Amino acid sequence: MTERIDKKPTQADKTSQLTSDPMSVVQVGLDDGYAYTKVALADGRLFSAPSRARIGSAGVTWIRDQEQRIFEYETGGTVYSVGAVDGEATQFDEYPGSALNRVIVQHAFQQAGLSGRSIHLVTGLPVSAYYRHDGQRRQQEIDRKCASLKLSVEPKPNSAKPGKSILSASVAFHEVIPEALAAWYDHVIVTQADGVTLDGDRLSAPIAIVDIGGRTTDFVVVQDQGIVHGSSGSLNRGMLNVKSRVADLIQQTFDVNELGEQSIARAVDSSRLRLHGKDHDISALVAAAKRELVEPLYAETRRKLGLGVELDQVLFVGGGSAALATDIANWFPNQTIPDHAAFANARGMLKYLQYVCDDTVGGF
Image 1 (spheres, rainbow, N blue to C red):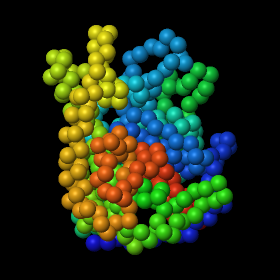
Image 2 (image 1 turned 45 degrees about the vertical axis):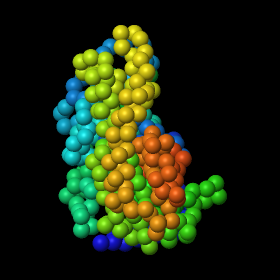
Image 3 (image 1 turned 90 degrees about the horizontal axis):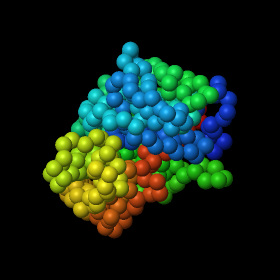
Image 4 (image 1 turned 120 degrees about the vertical axis):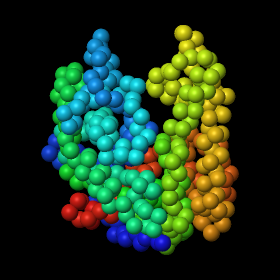
């Protein structure tokens, strides 16, 4: 089944800029992934924060307020700590509509300087969470996520920086689109210094988007401005599998009990592990864990896309595409990883909000 994608012509003078007026509406593209939460703002700024939070107060007193790295938020009567904590697992189906997701998103808004602002927002869901196999939308899941981020999340007073107040950022409008499709919008809607254009060649070309994220890898094929569902879908594997596997290998290699989630994340990012005050090179363990992920990714990519001979381009996006750039090289002769690939979805969500959404939201 193929779903049609309707578009409106772009107009550069409709671009919404983030202003200093606290009463103005802010347009935000938000890729609230299972591993990282990415924010794209209309003035070109990009923010990323780990999707890391847990229930309960921080239990930390900061010697210097300026060094504070854990922040507290309350939603639904429950307090959560967000930031430099050993976070609860986000890899569960209900995460996009959960309180855990809400507090992480609110923290991302605060880190992006949106305290007290009214927000018009576009987010995403994995392709398999957004569409059924026959191409019909999973409207209940979409509505649940839309409603969740409109619920109140209140920053606790101790989350304010010294000398500043902190107010909740509120979501006044929220639309959800398929995550990998957001990267397609980023690809075809081109912003330049002299305005915005809809790239005609990119618009008509058959293209595949492979979005390697934290929990899932999404596939979307767009041809003649329609989503080809037979070649689209999701695989429940991503970079969080690498982190989990590295944790197992560290325990086996160094004979240690369970390490904190933050320590594992740092070890994966740096290929170094610090134990008892000494650094250990674990690049071989990280490489082995990546290979274990790449093998099923390659197999699923071939199942979905074949050799890609009828595709003009295969676009790899998401934080995993950047992290695995060497491992996925040369899968297709016409593949590309865009600049700042981790933000492709967030940028596309913002462009969708600015140039595709209904006029009442500030589009056209």
